[in-house]
Structures are given as C-alpha cells and as structure tokens.
Amino acid sequence: MQKDFHYYCVGILARAAGFNTRDALIIAYASQYVDDSTESKPIKLKDEESKTEFLFDPVRTAHTGLKASKWSIHKRVFIPFHFIPPEGFTYTEPASYFYTPPNFVTRSNSHFANKILRNASRERNEKRRLCRIGIALHTFADTWSHTGFSGRNSKVENSVKNIHIWDRNEWHKETVTDKIIESITDIFAGEVGHCEAGYLPDLSFLRWKYKNPSNNLTIEYDDMPGFVFDFDCNATEFPLAADESVTLNFTLTIYNGPAQPFNFSIYFVQS
Image (cartoon, rainbow, N blue to C red; front, side, top):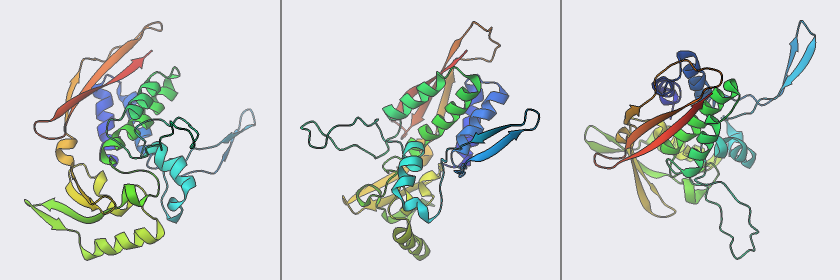
C-alpha cells in the first residue's frame, strides 16, 4: 500500500475509532513513516540549557537501492515491517523430528500481525502507544497488499512472470518496458518481496494477475473489493478520568468479493 492508505486512510480510521484529531494524526504519521524512515546512523543531540548530550539511534524501517538484496536488510527491514510472516518463529533444532521450516510468506489478516497490533494497543506509555499502534497498523495493512510474497530473496516465493492488468473490461499484458525493468530488477535486486511486480500490489484500486513459474500457478489480485471497508464503530470521543479506561471495539468488514465478507476487530485500550 501507499500513502493514500498508510497515512490518510489510517488517520480516518483512527478518528472513527474514537481518537481525537491530534492522536489520530500521530498514529497516521507513524504508520506512513514506516515507508519513509531510511535513517540508520546514530544522531547526536544536545540540550543547550543543561549541556547534556544524547545519542539517538534510529531504527531503519525502509530501504531502497542495491543493498536491498542483502539478507541483513531483509531480516531487519522487509520481514519485520513490510512482509510479516503469518506466525512467529519458534526455534527447533533442524535435526529434530518435529522440525518444520519457518513460513516466510505473508498472509492477509494473519494471527501474528493481529498479535503485534494487540500488543501495541496495550502499551502503557501514551505517546509510545500511539506510535506503536501506527507502526503496527502499517504492517497489518501490508498483510493484504503483500499477501503471497515474502521479505526475503526467494525464487519460489516471489517469482513474478506474465503480468496482466485489467483495464476497460479486458486483460492487458505487460509492456516491453515493464519486462526490461523486471529483468534489471532480477539482476541487481533479486526476487525480494514484490520487487518483480513493481508497485502493482500497492495500488488498492488495481485488478491484476501474474504467473509464478516455480509452481506454475496463476495468481489474481482484485484489490478494489479487497480494500472496501464497512465501518461499524461503537466508540465515541469523550474525556477520561485518570483512573478510567475504555476499550474501543472497531470492527471492519472487508470484502474479498461480492459474496465473501469476513470480519475482524481491533481493540484499542485508552487509559
């Protein structure tokens, strides 16, 4: 997804869930900043009054360029923030009888993404809680647009060929320019995430399909019905006393097709 969802839509959802304008904007900013945070070097700060020096060590959550093909970027940036696996990993000795290779392929509305969002909403520090909710919502939203892809370099998981885009009631095959860009991507960046599909998975209005040659499957994405939300929020905005708390139950109905809706709830605890 892009800024239209990560910032604007998330901000609207936060307001609808009962957060005031200031807090909703913080959540939206934190959500979008996951795609914008490319700083990784420590930053020295100084308080002019006390003459105290601080060292701010930022966490990089976005990366572009040729270094994106490195495993160090995959495990620190792509996998935890953009292509979250469906479940957390539990270490088991590879030689063990019970060993199962971890699944890196992102799945929409996964248990793990929901767990991260719930944990963020329970943060006791108010400012940190808003930022954590925004970051978690970014990863949570990406489970839809990035479903079927993984954040590591994998020909089996991320190979994209024979792209077709639905436009004016018919399928249109990718252009020669698109194929050239795809080939260059293979050479320099490898098959990481939806790199071979370019920006297509992040466009919430687009219907498109591709073939994964590793398993010979044709996979179709119809993002327009996939990103239609029906809001049912039972929360209203009101001030809370210091010793009060309220759980905001914000239910979204997401339609994967005209007759295939399913529900999930997001619980925000404000205290």
